[in-house]
Image (cartoon, rainbow, N blue to C red; front, side, top):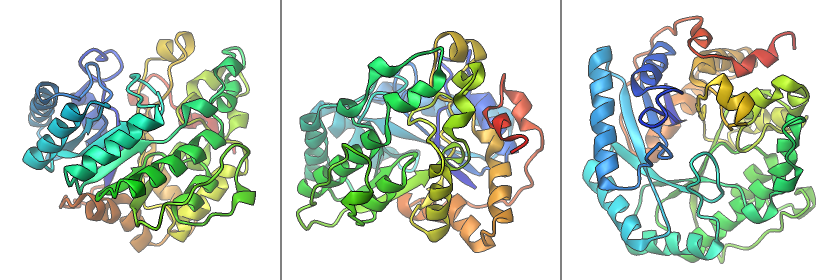
Length: 362
């Protein structure tokens, strides 16, 4: 298996997790490779930090003595020279630099490129540089967020702060901007969480089915290659689980969605509209979650259970292989052998809390 979306912390966030620990859990969960996001501390936006991260990950793999593959995304800013350096690193170091990442909305790390003019600049620059790899995008439109609705005493309010319309509108923006710039790579929508966003990405423009505020736009006839990934939490957890004090443990970006949206996302995964599953593994300490209201939670430990749940729901072995390995290898152009190991049980105990414990009894 491959997890194309993990946050392994370390460096300035070593209290949350280290590279060695995250890679150890990934290996014991049955994974053959992980692709790490760039919102580390400091972020992976320069040659120096990227080379240092690769060196530190290699040291962790050697210390563990396991052949797990570690790739990373180079983070993008709205500075053309930095974008050019990131593309150069991708060409030079691929597949270790497995792709590029743009935050079209702020999340953990405050790396957001939220101005649409700056987003357009990113696509134009990548097109001019003839970048043909994967651009992974966190799609949430800042202008449609409602930060004034946030109330830590009622964690479920986070779902109102970052509504479905913010994701749908951002997906619309990215697809339109990529087409207009004649972007030559693959646009990957990370942790897609709303069925309307999936339908829009796949070219089903039923405006009546969209949430309020998510108007659509044509792509000008240009074809954009697109992929998207679904997390276990957006497939299984829902906002009713956030309606108590422990709801802060489920705060994540984009948020857990209301019923029946998780079931709708599972259906789109089964139907082939979603390319793969990705955990968005993002550990924090319990103190960070409860006192600082941090967004994100561990996901690697739950992945084997999620795959088992999909099998129990009727997903074929071929479909499981596609969404856990083959589709990502194909899109990124990597060849990561599948070892087919049996996952180690009880990995949830590796972390201070298990967000998926909310599923017990349901």
